[in-house]
Image 1 (cartoon, rainbow, N blue to C red):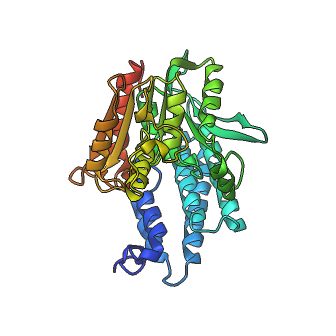
Image 2: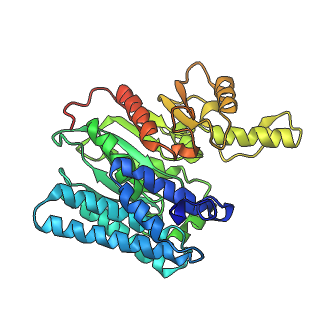
Image 3: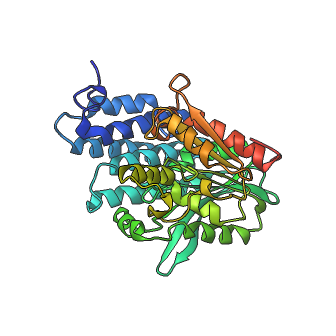
Length: 371
């Protein structure tokens, strides 16, 4: 019997594209310890056709089971098992919240449970992580998880990981933290929501200076005694991260950056120019000049899948046409033959992140002891 969540009339139908994407995310998270294949398939079999509430109900139940296992393991001193179960619980709570309306109180309850699991994971980790608050604009601060490098003595190269407005930072604890840890990096996982609910994204999207958040993060890291500030990089998770590209253009303190390089901004300018027969692209409104239209002061890596929103050939053309001699911009395209070719490498994020963190390692230099 094919699980309901995997059948054409449930997971692949256009009106359930969000469920399809989330289930794919959960399956790929299993590669990094954020889920188990067996648990995902079990839930898929338990989902009820025509009952959309079953998605929230079943993932929440599974999250609670993993959370209870984590607490029991922690009480008995089994830190590794506790960490693993808290990470899975965190991820499953995120799945339970995903399809609910931002105004639905159950969504916020699930988000709070997810964040509590993340905090418990940080306390069981060695060295322990910490929740940090970073002032940004009046009335709103950023919130992050700082995970020290395994060799916790002295200053360590540090990678900032941030997603698009509305993206929550907890996913990075599964998706990116292992890659940073194995290379001896500290990691700061961030989101723009802070301690606000998900509907705060509407406020964020109205801001025209969203990239200023990154300068505030750099100011914070500069004051930390355990950060090698000459070796700080940023990774914009997902795609369409032009606000990070604009921040990199304005921020000379980065040693390396992984983002879309302003590709999406440039693509939109080209589209509007051709649509309205505009020869002068400078009259097409964009928030700021894209990264590749100016000179970045640090090496930049752009990764995309050939099956993503922007055609790979078009991206290569934009990079080749826009790159300046003083810019150090690398474009890596993942093909369907190697996987990682979906939008934001959703089909195999592990492969893409291995490439990304290897590139960061080459830019940030030797990291010392690795675990």
